[in-house]
Length: 162
Image: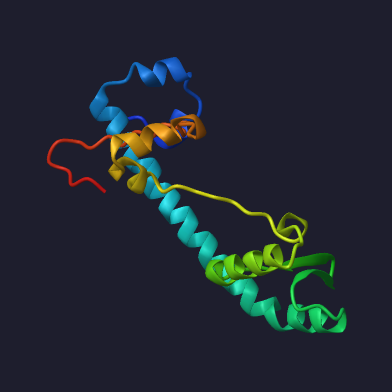
């Protein structure tokens, strides 16, 4: 019987973070690739299972929603000792050009559009960086830059980046 000289993902769970950080870059890259593959497999399995559950309970959920007089939202029903809780979220998209027209109409009629809508202005970073310096400097005080969570992708030599 041969004992593998590589660390498994299961063994990794029981290691201290400092010990993991001390591993050679090649080993970290292999473990990261293994973890990525395990995550993809787990997501694929979860999607498969969710599809089967949706197939099993989709019609009952639609019926329960109909009986509750709902098009969307959460409903509950029992299947033996299990309570099935299903949610059909409501996603609303608004036509921004039409909203802008309506805001102007409300304002023109002497009413305050803030009583009806939340107005949000955004500047795409690509546009901002293309502006001439004079315009950019006028907007500097309205701009805050935050960073997100750093990510690291380790690619072993000869391996194609994912």
